[in-house]
Length: 210
Image 1 (spheres, helix red, strand yellow):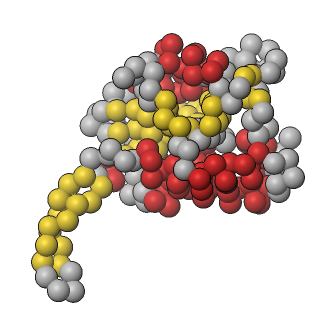
Image 2: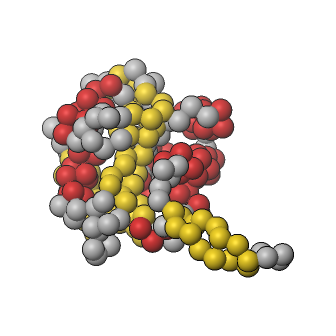
């Protein structure tokens, strides 16, 4: 379906997201919560990932069992805040390859400006999961997926903690075939391009900067 949005409403996800929203949450607690929430999100986003059958020996017998095609998965982090989600997901998918897209938001135009791009060679045949805590204006997400499409991955998914109607409209206006996985769809953007009620600047809260 074009414009798919999957809201991960598991109680643990929502509980941890609520703690992250609180302005009283410390940097270290915010970081830990993001890692934990990312692992829970990874469980959902990989639900339909391909597996292959291997022969293994249990303590009692030889049997056929399924394993994830981990080397086919590429986690693509939109720097810098995407690093927090990346670290959590790698705990569950340690064999995944990693890519990075460096973008910053122009404070005047709110447009995305690229300063770095590196992904594994031979992306064809790989499943890419793009991660960034916030899908706000949608400009960074669109720019990252635009660049990623040039490498011709087998599939692309986008994972974020929070988004809003404006960001989803912008993103799916450019990439209607890329599903979005999020923990919540908040009400709106403010005049500075921040999600409301949101949780503030995810990068600043993750790294303790302003």
